[in-house]
Image (tube, rainbow, N blue to C red):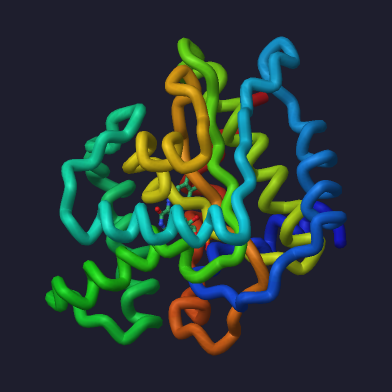
Length: 220
Ligand SMILES: Cc1cc2nc3c(=O)[nH]c(=O)nc-3n(C[C@H](O)[C@H](O)[C@H](O)COP(=O)(O)O)c2cc1C
């Protein structure tokens, strides 16, 4: 698969089959993703790949934290509000996703239940939680973004679907407790991954992108 094809075909999948990815393929993907670039080659990512019984226990813990409506305690603030064109894009993406799922705009319960699927990893058999060490901040977070895209494109190339999820970073203490991760490692987000379940309605959603002329400024 070419890089262009991988970029164009990767999309967020929100419903997975139970079939696990083999350990060989998992190790290969994370070995290649190591070649992502980073400021001064510090490689600030600290990914924790979770499967099997540990994932099952974490799914239960995160789902019950979400259902109890506990106050979220992310390591970085998650309260930024999108305005203007960014708000329009956000609304458009939500309309596309909830539309595919057949959930009405004012169906608050339906939306909440759909949201809670995040904490269940959309039934994926694997998730990777991406931490970075204190006191890393914005500079290193850009490296993490590149690393995450490498992981998702590699997954795509191996026929494996994924969904990056800020929602998996909302209860970092729960994740650290379950994985035995020290408190100096701060959680940015998680990525659920596995083989796509084609029968899940959410997976029929396709969001678009802004036109290049509205985004990119070419200078010479
Ligand atoms: C860092 C990051 C966090 C995201 N968080 C969530 C999330 O919590 N839940 C979710 O369903 N999708 C999440 N997404 C997926 C985006 O909604 C999705 O990438 C965007 O709508 C574009 O759609 P596409 O990935 O299908 O191209 C996240 C994506 C990124 C990159």
